[in-house]
Length: 251
Ligand SMILES: [Zn+2]
Image (cartoon, rainbow, N blue to C red; front, side, top):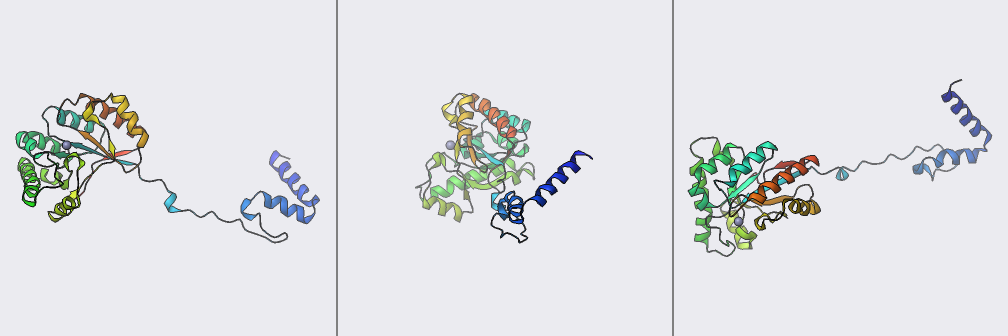
């Protein structure tokens, strides 16, 4: 007799020796769902309902860069994004796009997304309509002009606006929507413009990291060496944690 048969035989013997009530209790005690089953009745164990809302959220993080294009920093960021197969949206300042149209083109050629951050990088929350219109429309015009050399590149442009300094108002939202634009904010600030230690930048992000969050970094302005280093640490860690890194705004 093999081990399985011995176990089965002893189990059967135990059940036969027990009074009927105790046998039922012993069998039912192994199933917490059937604990209230009346003695002497056959009860099926309850099936645990699967709640779709309890399924894991999609592991996506959206990456965004403000203040470019910049002939030094933007191309280096594009190379890093390529290396990690990461997508991002670049919110460009219109006057920088006029000065560096070849960098605007490069961003589109790398299949990254382009949106606007105002023409003059001013507080747009309280502008009169005409000035607001020019900030948006002139930014769009110079970016599309930079992309017109190849017909496919213009499709990388999306009608989204990131207000400089994150300053918004009801008026700003309404006016942007009237012009067919969505407002793009963020919820993870790397503070890379303060040039923190890249390890600290990563540690701060990890404290508040959750699927669906939007990371803010900068590819223009001042010295961005810390941004390059921090970006590589962040991308490495996100990928190790199973995240996809995608551009924000499909509008
Ligand atoms: Zn900015």
